[in-house]
Length: 293
Length: 110
Image 1 (cartoon, each protein chain N blue to C red):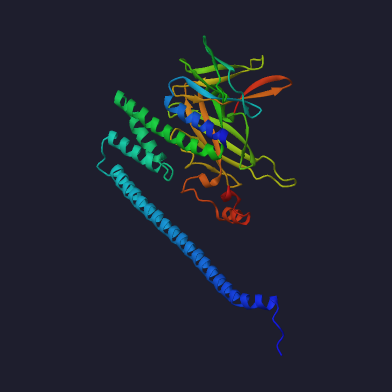
Image 2: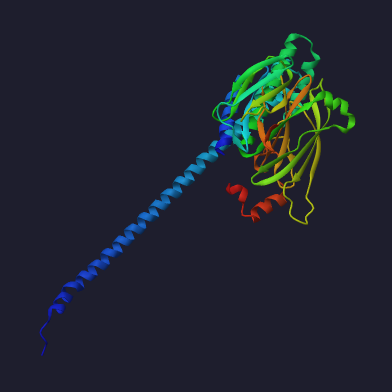
């Protein structure tokens, strides 16, 4: 004999099909939400792929354009039937403004300046001033860009004192710079200056600012000539910590010359100045701290 | 980074206006700009130039007729430290650092 159904049995009868319905509804909701998430991810991935394709196509187009331009200008610049000096100046200006961060244009600048300086007419002097102006502008542009990530300091060279000092040269006030938290002591010694060519021979010594106890500090010593046609991104000294330091001739007067030294992370050197393999490995092992910056 | 960006903007906006004998830069004390109203005087040979005042970011700007060695004097906290600098055909950036030693300020190139 069946027992009379209580209130809970009645609720159970009602809830059993409702449970099935809720389960089916939950499965439907989860499936729908899941498919939406997958769709969204796919859309994002498609967007990213499209963006990357567009960027690489643009890069490729720009590279091709730059390559064609470079080949065309270089070919006409170095053609045996040389054009006028004015045309050379214009071609060099084109090269300098478009390729100053990837090509060392110093040989072309020096060659053209030699030709212009041999001319004594006012036009030649004017062209020489224009050549110097281009070089200065490029060097300043590069310096501005490097100073955003690096550190610079300026020193004045007394040309009379330097001449009187003889072969020993003249030491400039040392400076301590900190790039990416790494301190370095920089000593500059000017060895000689050529007022005609407007060049200064410099010896640079860079020591780690805070060497570890018991470790012999690795010192970078180098000697080079600085002229208005040296550009910091292209022509810099590779330090043992992977950073770079470059010296720029900012001004050259009758009594004094102005040197600007800029030290910066190695990544900001030109494309032609690639890091050493051991530096890359060191950076990878240290978790790419310089890349994360 | 902001200070560097400001210095960059200042120098890059000043550069196109550079003319013969121009001298410009910033003055800092203990790594911070000296601020507005610090007087900077220049003397080149016999010629002396009236003082110019620094702006909010401690930047100054002098237009000098003479080229060659000059002396810059900064009037700061009742002291007048000075330094020898050079003026050229082109504009030149001379960033200065005030260093206090025994209560007396000395002026150095950055």
